Amino acid sequence: MSVVQGTDQGEVIETDVVIIGAGPVGLFAVFELGLLDIKAHLIDILDKPGGQCAELYPEKPIYDIPALPEVSGQGLTDRLLEQIKPFDPAFHFNERVDRLKRLEDGRYELETDAGTIFRAKVVVIAAGGGSFTPKRPPLKDIEKFEGKSVFYTVRRMEEFRDRDVLIVGGGDSALDWVLSLQPIAKSMTLMHRRDDFRAAPHSVQQMRALVGAEKMRLVIGQVSELKGNDGLLASATVKTKTGEETVVCDRLLPFFGLTMKLGPVADWGLNLHENLVPVDTEKFETSEGGIFAIGDINTYPGKLKLILSGFHEAALMARKAHSYIHPDKKLLFQYTTSSSSLQKKLGVRD
Picture (cartoon, rainbow, N blue to C red):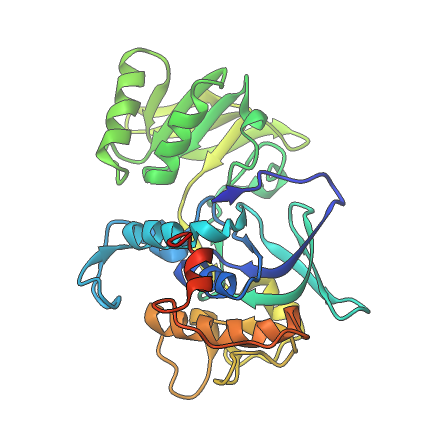
């Protein structure tokens, strides 16, 4: 897995296909495209692959994946990443596609909220029910600090070096970033409304060990007010069981969970039906040629919102995408069980 941490402002990435969404269906699309010699870049607003499976229920068992009687959301993600490893896809995490337009040469240009620009002949929307949007804490004027000293994701760890960091939350994201940023922060404070955490037990143990060694603070309470000027945070007022206290901080990371929204997809000129993207069932193409929608984001008669349905959609999408990427190359149908050329691509045959 190749993770692209960031690109220079205005730099253009050219590729065959851009896949929006790195959930299970987006990951399997890499496999189907790769078998047809089609390269892909994946963009996801989350900080890791797996989409809803890995973010919302990483340990919850799934029972309807063919040949896997039981597999967790994270387990399924890990297996898919192993399966697509031969095709070395490039991942762009913590980015959301804000703009999409067709160029005069027929390709599409996409730009993310981080300023990354892509150009591709094919776009595949595999964004589940839409983009995950962080929940904003109910704090007065918090929007004035957003993007300057209040962040909902970590795009560059250096942004937090030698800073007084306050992280709010009790799940895996909060604990993971506490452990990752504590070594480089000037000070680290973790705040949660109760002394009970939903994160992995090992992460909680590591956090408590740091607290015991006085390398960070744990505060049980809730933020009630932010203080600072010109978007630069200076401190947070915290309500605890014993009253109020001030926590010095110039960086705040609130992890209050995620909501699902269709987001910018609604502004891309596609035909929509009840916040879903209609497609045809021959190739899962949208109303715009070269733009496909697979997985829970699409709709058609008889649609079932199942991961296995998305896998089927990815396979048919890839065959039509081939005609855009390799218009002069005849597509031959082959089985991985008997095709030596496919087996070579997968690295299982010399």
